Length: 382
Image (tube, rainbow, N blue to C red; front, side):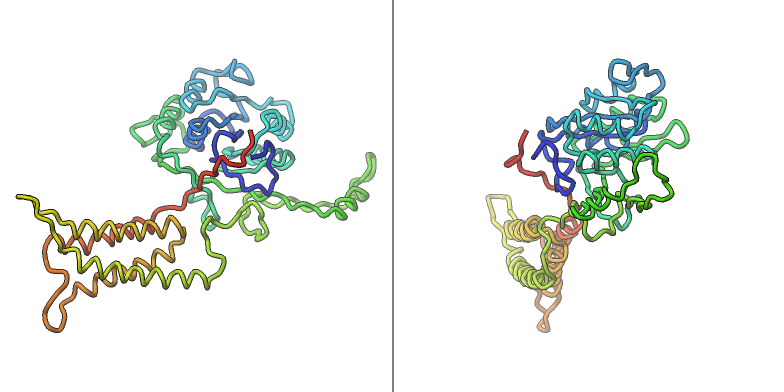
């Protein structure tokens, strides 16, 4: 990865030690609640992390680590962060954020701030420095928008430890976080943190840029006579169909025709596996006093491998659903009595498990969320 990716870069937040991420928050404590798991995961991957606060916490006496309160030190230490700063109150926030981005040669910026002023300043600074922008948003705050989900389940304890370092804001009981003061966020800590990928401003054609430069008002000119520029669009607006920074999910099919063909093959494969598993699930192997249900075990493993393999390789729930219909449907039909009264799935523990387990596995595979993939380190520069 280049040191300064372009706005159209598909770089994601979680891409390894080559990353240098700047997190922007309103005040100490917000970094733990909104992005604590992501910060801990990045630091676990040896990525560079700088946390930038818009205001100091009570007890802080400086604009950097040297004057931080013990709460801030303990929280950021729990997340593995050693570099955090506070925006100087008398400076332009956009210029101050851009200075930090340029200093650390940031590869991305994550905005957890809820202040509209600080959000706008961070977005402007990121666009000026040509750095990708990710905005922290909960699932309920981003209904209808494509979100980036970061799996932080391995770093929940670090996030809880960071939250516990702010006793004036939260009390922590297990994974349940209760706000001490009204207005602070609270709830259960989960293993996923979600973000919106901000839309970069479109690059102006060379001719238009030159015309704008010619028409730009000179110092001292009447501002009323200058052409009014349209306000920039919402950086998190998902409606822009030309967003180059929002690539289609990996494994998505190019056309509906290909998806339909793949679904038909998956349906047929599900039927085949369902029939073969139904025929074989009653097979057993006797080893002395122990009777092993090898047929049930092999049939369940084969069905699970089919469903999981389709989801991992194609990453398309429609295809997995078609396979599930073929698999579960064939098991259901073969479990019914024939006109002669015979059944292929007799009553008993093995028959019950064979009718339940494939359905349970299929439900889990279909419900499993799509998580961002780790980029390979090949081709990444320092």
